[in-house]
Length: 134
Image (tube, rainbow, N blue to C red; front, side, top):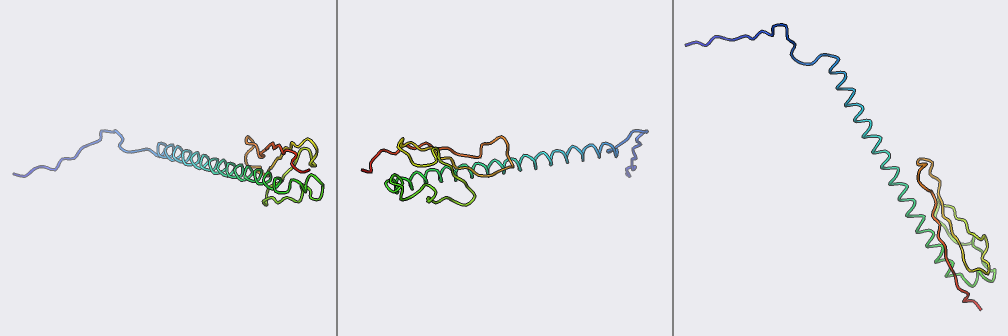
């Protein structure tokens, strides 16, 4: 017994995608990929900012340690705060700008990062140094 080959007619109905549907699907996929790329870029920027913040915190702590090491020299004026070392790419300010009798010093370490405007680009540490140099 032979089976007849059947042909189906579409009766005017469409099968598959139209060109407009395909273009809309490509547009949606493209926008999705672009948004993922933007999110990845922002993630990398925040990771870099976090890294800079951590390094600045370490530099501020290192400054406090350097002051402890040279405390008597700083108090008698034979050494200045500008003599202390600092990593490249960072700037440091002191308040007050010289080591005075209050024994309290505010150290601010900052860096330049124009990529993120909603994140602070500085670290401030307050340190108290007792009068041990007599």
